Length: 198
Image (cartoon, rainbow, N blue to C red; front, side, top):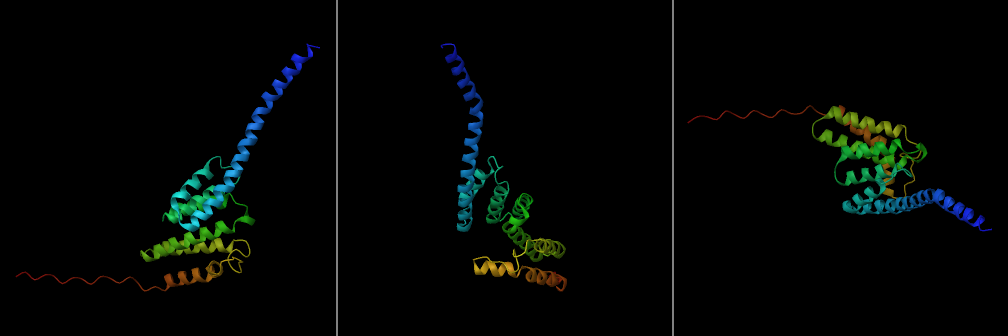
C-alpha cells in the first residue's frame, strides 16, 4: 500500500507541474481581456473628455500583449495622436487599425481615418499645396466608396451632428476638390518700390 502512495503523490506533482503553465497562461489571458475592456472604455471616455495624459496611459495598457483585440491599441493610439495634433501619426495608426479590423466592423476606423485625411487635405489647401490636398481628398473619397453600407451615407449615429457630418462626407469632399480645381491662381506680391537715396 505504501508503494502506491508515492506513485500517487508523484502523479499529483507531475499533473501540477504540467498544468501550471496552462493555468498561468489562462490567468494572463483573463487579466489581459479584463484590462482591454477597462482600458478601452477608459480610452473612449478620455478621448471624449480630451484628457491626453490619461489616454496615453490607456494606449500603453492596450499595447501590452496586444493579441486579443489587435485593432484596439492602434485605434486608441490614433485618437491620442489626433488630440495631440499629430495627424500624420494618427493616419498611420488608423490605417494600421483598419488592416487589423474585420471589414464588417470597420466603420469607426474608416470614419476616423477619413476625417484625418480630410483634415490633412484642408491643411495642404490652406498652406498652398493644392496637389497634395487633392490627393488627400481623393484618398478620403476612396475610403468612403469602399466602406460598408450605412457607414457614411444614411448612417444611424445617435449623435445628430456626427450623423450629419458622416452623411455629407461625399458631397463635402467633392466640393473641396472642385474648389481646388476652380481656385484662382495665387496672387503675386506687388514689388516694393525702390527706396530713393537722398
